[in-house]
Length: 268
Image (cartoon, rainbow, N blue to C red; front, side, top):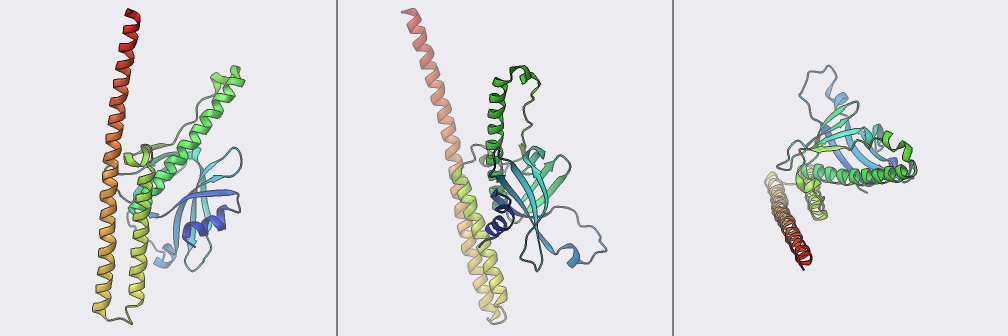
């Protein structure tokens, strides 16, 4: 069972929630002196989780979860609703990077994800979930406004979460193919880490030359597959851009033809 399944089973299923995505993170901050020993400051792993409730109306939640060293259990530390999530900052809109900021009403969390693909998966899933949530809220307000005409002027639309400095392929239509590619990259990254850890564990039993050679081989294979996936993702993004341009051009042609038809009908 992977980490996401374990967290879901232990923390979210008992609360009647459905886990959407998990991101392992570390604080992104300058190193400062501390009187605490290293073991006291770095004895846990932090995860940021996005979940929805199974009740009606659904709530979209962002939860900080920690797992302390030597313990198989996970602990909820903080939780926010999507209404409290003001902004998601992807830091770099031009390339995949592991950094991101989450801005809430009462705090700003600056994180570094375990890998760039994992962060991209997180942003894409969170963006989709936010869009679905706000669309459902907008529909509810419209229906409520129709039944309560007297109060409609006093009802302000909800403030939506802002996504800035995020690559367009993560937020523009949130392509399912891009999500598949990032999941493959993240899987290859986890495989590489696992293989390296196993190589280190077996280093005492194997010869140093053979161990380094096997590690380089695993690294080269994973690197080649990652590069191939990156090239594939680039081609898909360019294809999506061309499709959007063609659709826009086709729409312009259709509009022109419609106008000409109306003019000819009036003249006739």
